Image (cartoon, rainbow, N blue to C red; front, side, top):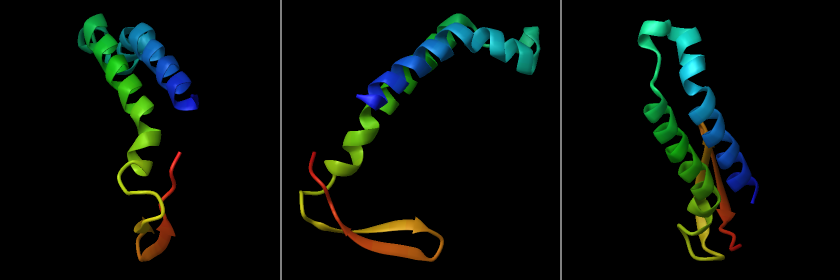
Length: 82
């Protein structure tokens, strides 16, 4: 549920504030239009909403998974099922 709320807040923020923020950052001549900002917001929502399921549904519950936690760091863990 948290990822859905964060995705919705991010989508609204990108859709509503995207043109204004890009005008401040890149000048009025290079600002993003409203349609582009809305579509970026929609894609942000779906990316955020799918984040919790991507790590847990990739492997069956209880499978041993080798995960990389950084350069030179590896750890073996068991996958979880929600």
